[in-house]
Image (cartoon, rainbow, N blue to C red; front, side, top):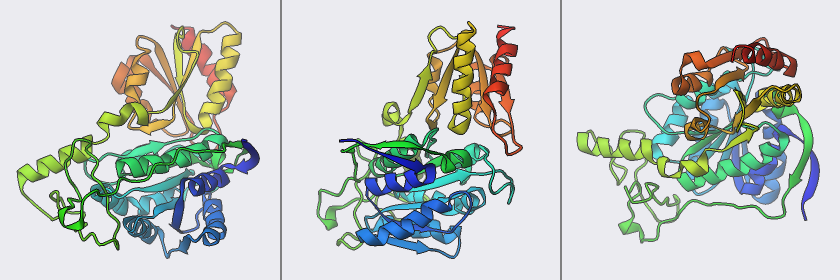
Amino acid sequence: MNRARLMQGNEAVAEGALAAGVLFYAGYPITPSTEIAEIMAERLPLIGGTFIQMEDEIASMAAIIGASLTGLKALTATSGPGFSLKQENLGYAIATEIPCVVVNVQRGGPSTGLPTSPAQADVMQAKWGTHGDHPIIVLTPSSVQECYELAVIAFNFAEEFRIPVILLMDEVIGHLREKVIIPPKLTIIDRKRPAVPPGEYIPYENNESMIPAMANFGDGYRYHVTGLTHNEKGLPTGNPEVTKNFMRRLTQKLNPYLDRIQLVEEVQLDDAELIVVAYGCTSRSALEAVHIARGAGLRVGLFRPITIWPFPQKQLEKYANRKYLVAEMNCGQLVGEIERIFGYKSVERLNRLDGELITPQEILGKIREVVHYV
């Protein structure tokens, strides 16, 4: 039977990660994500796992990379300033295709900013914070139930596609308390292991699936792991042809799986003249505004990207030739993707960055203003 529990968003992330099989956590306390570390510090030793409070966020990211190389599912959690510090090692994990999950509970910035206030200003950093062309998966929940569910999905994606996955939350969702239904059975995915003896193993094989099998350090498989551009055996190379093949596979390896990776919620879009695009805590206000607008006879719908990166362009393109209103707690970050697809003239913005929520009334007011001109 399903079990119902009252949980905080950060608690639900921790519980979801444990359900997914996480056995290693390394982190450094930072508001508003600290509850995740506190729960992991208490729970992991009870199940044979390991919790380490590192000296800083740089070391925390390095530690989960090392743990993952030994075969463990590994997690770290942070907020804006810490997320910035993780970027170099995040790039290393991407280049070496090491699965792990990074939670970023966003707060006001830049710099120390507003430590206890919400924001959604790390959207572009989640995609491009580490240098170079690279793939990344970024998921964002809008409820405590989704905090639990997306924590499980994040680990499944990380393991299946050999990639770091970012769970991009915000302070509101992290500290919100709601009922969470815990299902009796979960789909849990583990990384693909080599089916060949150590002497025949190719750690970065360019195979048909584009996702190489991954051996555990300590299991007799010896291979080179480097952030340098490398060949299929993991050895550094400057050969242009080898580099081209490596980068093509690395940057395109998610493409065959986008239909499963790109998760969205669509609300009353078929006849909508105006589509509100929102995510995280802002989507809760947007949903309420859409319901009120519909009650007033306005043809409005909600498109909520649950997967922010890779951006679900295909799903949104089904609703072309509409007007779009993008509401987000930043100066305008995800809105650039909608403008790229449909053009600037089709897209309106609603932004707030004072540490306060965008309210349903603000979104409703903007809806009335935009619909008047549709």
